[in-house]
Image 1 (cartoon, rainbow, N blue to C red):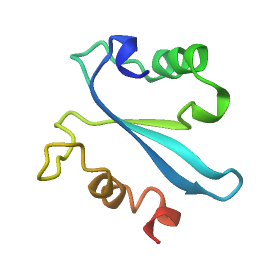
Image 2 (image 1 turned 90 degrees about the horizontal axis):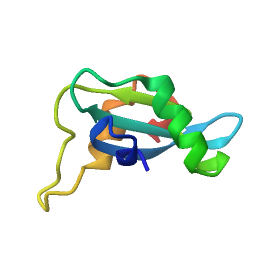
Image 3 (image 1 turned 180 degrees about the horizontal axis):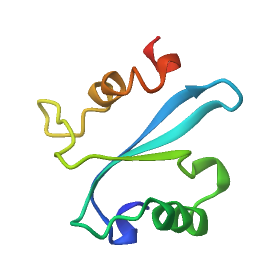
Image 4 (image 1 turned 30 degrees about the vertical axis):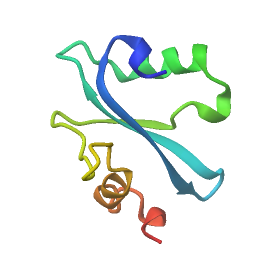
Length: 91
């Protein structure tokens, strides 16, 4: 759904433990150029997805998302990168 916004080159949605929600969705994205607008992207998701699937936060990075040896986005590596931002996800 994030790709459908026209703002994203790469994206990964991650489940991060959340004290009130149990688990929250965080999206890590590589924007397409300078057109990235987090608020617009969240609103795009709200129009297209059920509430429980809308990312709580979108983290933009200018570098490619990490890949595993099979060429797929390495979600475990992303969770490790986010450990300091979301300490509950370190378990």
